[in-house]
Image 1 (tube, rainbow, N blue to C red):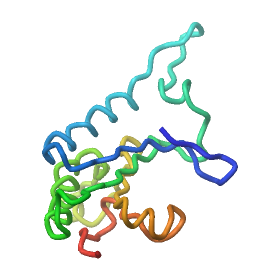
Image 2: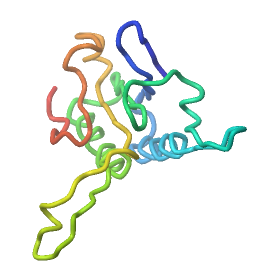
Image 3: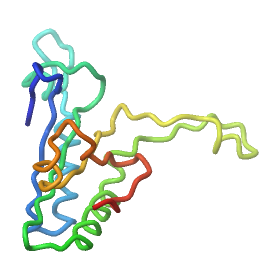
Image 4: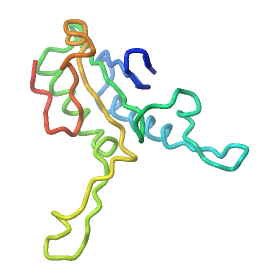
Length: 155
């Protein structure tokens, strides 16, 4: 977990991937994050609040906090294998970050174009590499956000 309110950084969870476990194992961690973010026990007054909000300061946004994944391949993984790994993890975690579509109904294809995506239960999932982070810093364009139409093809 990372936070720096003085720098305008809300609560963010950070996962560092040293590329020593399979993409499947890494992707499974995000289902655990989602279960944790959904955990809402009742307090003494009977109201529910997400556990993570009781342990960390409030953010300025609704929904779950972002999870930033920093890929650190070292000499273990080459550039193409790293891009492939990032794309694989992105696909394996699609249900966690993609939101759910709510169609308007009405038939005749209306449901396909009339509706909206609800991201209230989605985790904003951000990817970068340790090299990019060290070279340019966290406040520059080093992050890829899953679901924003970009595969991990940049070097």
